[in-house]
Amino acid sequence: MSVPPRSAIRPGAGVDIVQKHHQRSGQLTRGVVAQLLTSSSAHPHGIKVRLTTGEVGRVQALATPAPSAPI
Image (cartoon, rainbow, N blue to C red; front, side):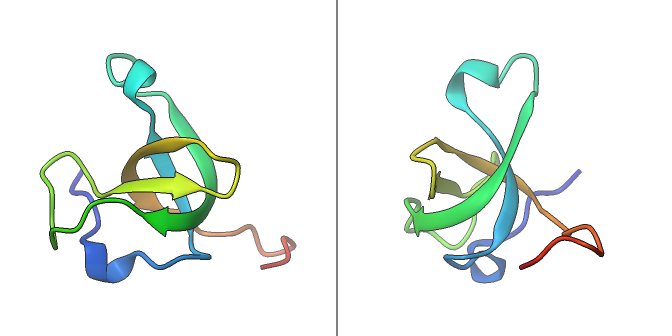
């Protein structure tokens, strides 16, 4: 699975991240981007972001909202 580039990630976007302490298990956390922390255009392990909940991790995928979920 390839990780999305920085240009595809914006504050307010829904994403799936892997947090540092979940890197071995690969457990994903879904949330909304508050801030982009990686300044480069790409990173092999994903762009680092801070979610609105304060959690920090690397984006593994853009989240697609469920049809009934408000955006």
